[in-house]
Structures are given as C-alpha cells and as structure tokens.
Length: 333
Image (tube, rainbow, N blue to C red):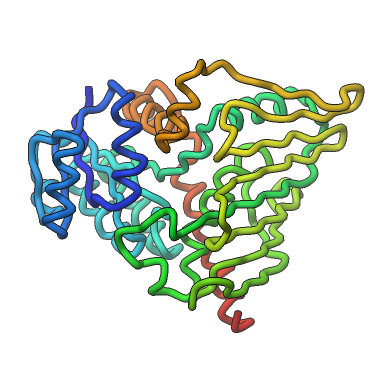
C-alpha cells in the first residue's frame, strides 16, 4: 500500500478523488494540505488522514508520504510538481500538468533526474465504455478511423468550485476542458498536432465560456470539438466515425455502455457488467474513471504497467493548448 498526500482540498478532491480512493485499496491517505484552514479541517474529517498542513512544503518533507496528488489551480502545478519530484515523491497532478510548453519540458527534465513517476489526471481515459471503444477500434470494428466528434459540456454552477481560477484568465476554458478532449482522442486517433480553426464566445460568464475547435492528428484524423461551461446538463459525448461504421459513447451519464453502428449491423448497444451498485455510484458522483486512474497510477509506480499517456504526450498536448490560446488572442475572441 502506498501512502498518499493530497495538496488542495477543493471540489475536485472532495467530489471525485476522495470518493474514488474509498474503493482503491492500493492507497491510504496520510496527509492533506490546504491554505484555507476551515476547508482543510472539513476535508480531514471526510477522509480521516493522519496529518494536515497549511504549507505544502511541510507535506513534501513528510517521510510518511510516498505519492503526492496535486489538486490545485493550474498556475501552481509546475512549481509543486517539481518540488514534489525533488523531494523524492511520485506525483499525480490534476490537468494540465503545466500551463506552458516550457514548463512541461522543465518538469520532464526534473522527472528524469529523480526517476519518479509523473502522471496527469486524465481520468476519462479509464471510463469502462471508452476502454471498450478502444478495443473495438483496435480490432477494426468500424474500419479506419476518420473523424471524432466530441462534445464536452459542463455546468460550473453545479460544480461549485472552491476557487475562481477559471475566471482569472480569459481563455481558462482551454486548460480546464481541452486536456480531457486531447487525452480521449489520443488513444484512438493519435496526437493532435494541427489547429485548423478556433471559435469562441461568452454565453453566461464574462470570460470565454464556449469554444468550437477543429484539430487534426498525426494520423490525419479530424477532431471536431465543442467545449462549454454554460450548459444545463453536463455531458461528454463522443462519436468515433470510421470508414465502416460509428461508435457512440457518453462518458458522463453512461460510462458502462456504448452504441456501435457498422456494416451489416444497423445498431447495437454494448453493455458492460457493473451490477446495480454502478447506478448508485453515479448518483453519488463516484465516476469509475477516477478509480481506474488511481489503479493505473499504482501499477505504473509498481512497474506493472506503462503510462497510457506519457510525459512526452503531455508536452505535445500543452503545445496544442498554448497554440489554441494564442489563436484566440490573435482573433480577439
């Protein structure tokens, strides 16, 4: 069992990480960090960690911590990840790993010097229906992959974030939502390497809260992407369009099923086993993807698996994110 220290007790930690860790026996929560002492105390009661700090450097010096989860606003990630690696800790970092291409390169250099694992939280990659979709695509179920249509819609009012970092930068939606899209498309379509078009507008908030993107990957696959913070019902809908059919998945609401339409088969629903409790888990916001993320982290640290998304992949994703932001600025979106 590995001893985990969590830096940041905001909504991501309380709504998702702690619930997943209740079902992952490979980790025990040893310590917490937050600068808000009231929030720190509330979270401590939720998880029963043995120690709490207001300064993350004290956690990094704690010999009882093997792995650090960095669940802070993106602007903090680069420094905290580097400090954790230098302290000899393995790191799981909320997306994005860094806010700049140069920052991601710096993290890679420190990681190579200290020989520790660094993974970014790309939890939806571990959604059961998406793992099944990847298997079907690799078996040629829908032929050659030609296009992905992805709709990632969120409702920030329902999310009730503890910090306002999303509204401190005009294009924060890019670093908040685009990593999910890039990590999901990576496994089936390759790495996005060209930005074809960028559109954006303000619907609910003073900052950009809706975006449309057309990207292409190094395999020549088109990514038709829509991201939003202002929709009533959250969803993450993906259509994988191949030369001989289509796979449709909804990662938020239906993580255990998908629809396959291919030549010779008009339409079939593929359901994965999960039992009645899977529906209770969804009502409790205990999405299976976070459980999968932590189990993958453990296996990578134990050298039982290789990272599904490497630090080099992260660097390329951040490069695309930076390019989208630059185009947005140039077009004065």
